[in-house]
Image 1: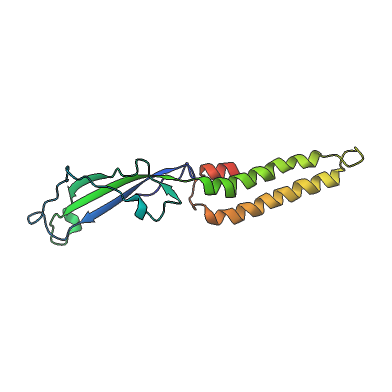
Image 2: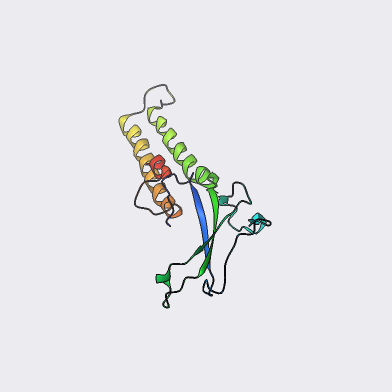
Length: 162
């Protein structure tokens, strides 16, 4: 299945791993071990800086059979499916994308600043500040685009940056 990134970087995803045995159902049957349920060894998880694992050790298990059309001989094979829920850690995107864009947006107040003598800034100076901030924001958006998912719809982060 594809990832749903509408709420990126505050999204939750489901990791599914399917293991199909190379022996037909006539030779092997998979059953769930209720005495020793499947566990997720979080200390071995290499993407823990990107993904959080709520419940840390809960993995759902499902024993099923493969589709006979997947086999050239028409056999069904035992298949085990393991599912784990993941939450994206959004701190990187907040500190490296959202916060700098917020600072650039708040700097637009500078276009209403006054000169040292108390007089208003001239129109050319105000436009210069505004245009510089707009160009900086556009340039930053292009730099940030390489670190966010490239999908055909707007994510929450895209909406914020726009």
